[in-house]
Amino acid sequence: MSNDAGILVVLPNSSIMGHGEGGSEGRFLKKQSGDFVLSRAAGMRYIPAMQEPTRDHGPQPLDSLLTRWGITNHQLVEESVEQLNHKQVQRARKGRQLTLHLMQKIARTLNDAIVSRLPKEKHAEFSPYIHKHLFNYTKSYDPAWVDPNEPLMPQ
Image (tube, rainbow, N blue to C red; front, side, top):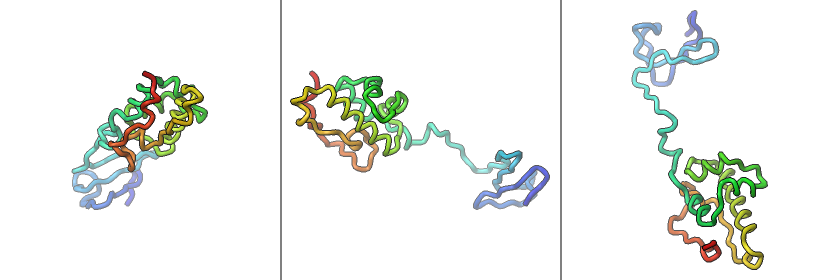
């Protein structure tokens, strides 16, 4: 179906009972100059992206580990050899959902930062962190996990 205004796109499970003005009970979009404009939205709901329950997971174990090790966001970024930036570290600490690749990058950088602060004789005792230790929304996260590096942390 098309008209003078552009292309009419019918969404699934909709019924068009008229030509789109006045008599339509369906939901459809009109394409005008490259943009889709919602013409009728009977029954459609808009949920703002910030209210999605799966994107923000609250403070992460990473945040408490960084605090206990005495590492700031800036120090972590400076230690990074993988182009980690301040925004990524801040989002990780606050619990914004990250990709697996970024979680692994943060874990590698954290391990490098910790090892660089430890005396050489303690390097063999350090057990590296992996992403499932740092983020509570990963599939294999274990809330009962006990940090084996607790004795190595600064007092």
